[in-house]
Length: 169
Image 1 (cartoon, rainbow, N blue to C red):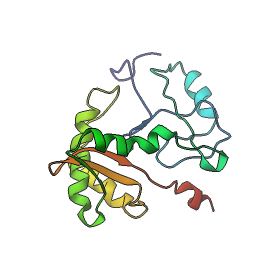
Image 2 (image 1 turned 30 degrees about the horizontal axis):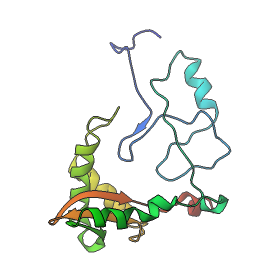
Image 3 (image 1 turned 135 degrees about the horizontal axis):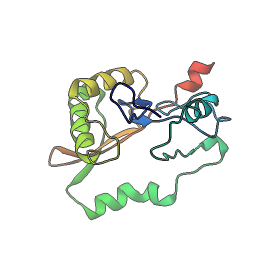
Image 4 (image 1 turned 120 degrees about the vertical axis):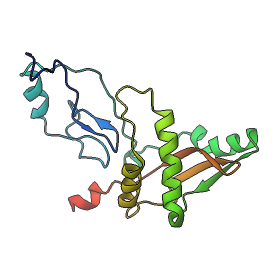
């Protein structure tokens, strides 16, 4: 492909807040999933016919409990093993009344932990706070956990319901 206004390379599509890249090239029988890429089947041909080439394969997996998926035993045992091994740690649910502070801690950890990941774009704090303000409408506080030591967040787990199921109806 020729140079376009001085560019010899582009990457995308990207939705930087949710950190999902690219487009789907197979698996179109599955419906869209919240915070995951989805596009019509013709996208792949549209881009490859214009001499675009992929930079990287990004994989997605499905863990649908309605289709028989169960969490591995080791995942269920992880909190107990972690707390037994590291006595100074505690695991707390996200405090929805303290969402701004928790969002800041998650923002700091995310930017630190993902800084060297391929394609990661550093998030500004207002972007993260805005994302959390929007997500708090649907968040299940039983699915968002913070791992703390000495009043400092050192890890987190975020789980959100797939609102596409509701929107589809």
